[in-house]
Length: 90
Image (cartoon, rainbow, N blue to C red; front, side, top):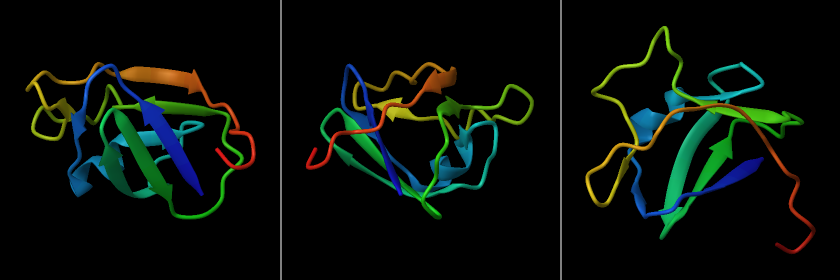
């Protein structure tokens, strides 16, 4: 019920960003997020067996609702990035 994303730099989370993530092309599955350094943990509405994640939909994104690094630079969009299942205890 969580997905952890790693970035090269620390990112800044706002709750409105939950709508910008898609699991296997489906929106509305991320309900919140939390940042710890360069790690962004997305909390899901329910457990998921999704195999891919995308950030920003080319048809509906807004420049006012973008994930930024602490350095003020926007994160690049990504599409259908494969998800890996973490080993137990990680």
